[in-house]
Image (cartoon, rainbow, N blue to C red; front, side):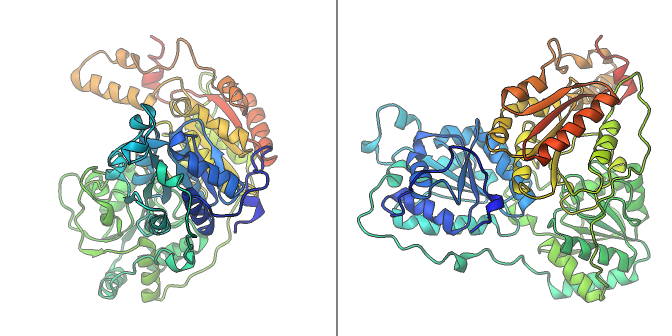
Length: 593
């Protein structure tokens, strides 16, 4: 069972005198969730799973798992997404019938693209038409409900009897956590949930159904890769998806230091190696920086460990030409490539391919090369590498936010659940495995608040500060996720980098206008979030979250972030709305015309 710190404390959320007898179909499902030590189940209430809801409350007492009520299914999934990335283990989500699945679709796609484990529990109206209530049960019954999301989940099932429920849940829990990870979906017939048991259903020993260890690399491939590394004069190591643990980070560093290999890391994957290590090239990239391109071109061997888009990286560095340099790639993501989506990205040229877990390949190479592994201690100093910039035209920038956060968190462990486009990585180096969790996977705007809350939930009760810097568009799409943070006292600090625009799309429209020799001043049409400007701090307060803003000056920023850090230390969420400049002179000069 989980420890007390992992349980959310809130008034009125614990059931009184739960019934311990497993008497109904949904009691079997709920009991399995407890046996699997599922900590939380995020949900928006729905009649299709009213049986399961009753079992969670009146059979389990709303503990292990505890329900986290959300105002939208998309937020429930996003919270589970953020939790899994920060905790290193999944939680559950309940989705109401077909309509709940439709609401959750974008967030499920994000989790799929991010390869995050998650147990999605759905429900449908009675499959026996004679048992359906008029109108509403017919609307909420689907012949194949999982078809709505099957292209971007790992596995699904709809058990047809109560005795089939345990195996369905065990298999789903196992598959979700088997590398490469991903969400799974188990749908319960409403009639099955509400079926009274005529005889006991024996629950299996769940320890015998644990997910298998990640696949190990082929010994011959490891030997060949090690020989190439021994011979290389300028190897380059690319780090993509991997475990967020100190042990594995130390293995990555041991390999890089042993072969004197320069390192590149990807913002999409989060902190895999320290971004200010002497072998790390520049800052972690989203798109390759000129410095990263040069490093790739100068390398005489490229070794990729779980790169999200190795083919795209190669194309960005070498153009349309196939590079002469030898390339090694370790990863098992190909197991999830199904063709519906193209998140597998470009097909890379690879000379040695290892179909295995990327971290397992790192470990095997360290052993083969007899590299010395040094256990490192976290460096929690926050002295910025660069000096804080002067205010330009009296406007704050993302660098001011980074420097202020560095000052407020000096000496403390921090997790950034999200960071926006344009984050100045040099001003706030990421050194710890959990310091930055990476992007949302599928690029689904609106996920930021939920991801922030999920990560903060995972670290609740510890000394780790959970902070998220998100754009105003992302925040506005997911603003009522904040209600869940307020209800359950989840200490997330959300800093909104607010430029009153969908800036990414402004940049795209600017590029199109230049390409077509059209009026660039029109790039703002349909992109600016103003006239009126939303009051994000007021919207946060309306959800029950304390907030500051809009913040316009350095002094206001300092005060707001000080209050924000102190608030989350006290166990409460906080939001800071920071009005920042557009950080682009060409665009800023035309703003508002």
